[in-house]
Figure 1 (cartoon, helix red, strand yellow):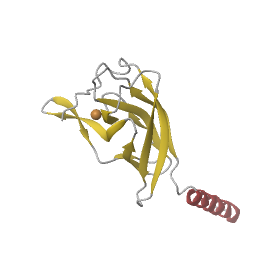
Figure 2: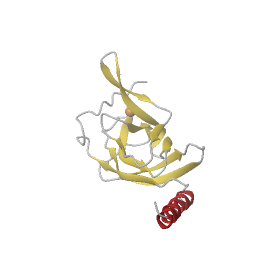
Figure 3: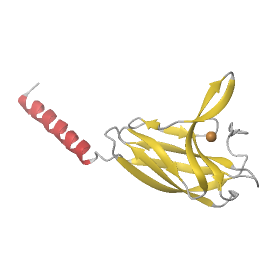
Length: 160
Ligand SMILES: [Cu+2]
């Protein structure tokens, strides 16, 4: 390697390091959020979206004025039955898209304050935490889609 190309390599590496330093704060992207509409008397529903982050991060909390409790859920097999259960955090490895979708990870709105109607929007605040413990929040308005969206039931048999 010539001296010139070594120098060039060094300056590119330095520029890259500076860029990373300037972007130490994770860039979180929330794509296509939506909430499944409910019927009267239904007390819980799911929120779905695609999440990604430029640096390692994790979804650690979700809040919404539309529900008393908001939980992060995963689907898992339990005695040959697919069930959902709460997880404390949903990891977002740098640059990877994590899909929250019916039958998979989702955010659960529990004890809804009113029926979630198609055509309305549900405000949500998502809290993300980087590996060094820094937290940031992202506020979104998720449109409500009809019950039939996604898989037929989404595994939403919520038990108390
Ligand atoms: Cu759930």
